[in-house]
Length: 194
Image (cartoon, rainbow, N blue to C red):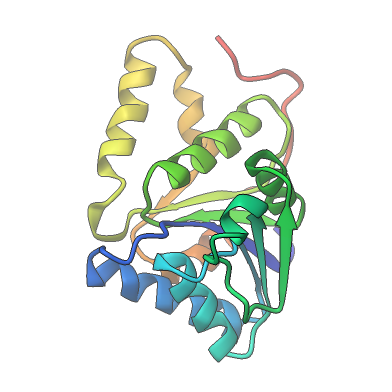
């Protein structure tokens, strides 16, 4: 990738998580702000989402939050971001996050984070994009997911090449170097389906 200008971060919205995950979100936000990489995220003010956004802003960076009306209306939206886009649906939110991002980083999170991760990887499998996807296995959080991917391949539901759709790194400090080292994006001539 030439130069990373905008990173979409998928992560959890819970405040009841390990301090190690909270610290990773804060460090990532600081890194993005210090490197003039715009954060694109789900627009929340709570959990890892809020921590990352606040850290980017504290470091002088830009943050675009994208949140659907039903979450905005119950006041979980972050009002201090550079730009807050309110969408009509979760689907529209995810599409907008995709459109505004050069690459994706996945921090620990719950079902929403899993949904976003599976969707962006499925879009890659279906040749709808060729952007880097970085899975941050902070404190071993994504080990069960990596085991599930192996199980999917071993069970014959996907080719081993699906493991090439994402790069796994141990820390947030590894995200930007991993994106810089990622092979130039290319969409294969046919989808990588069974």
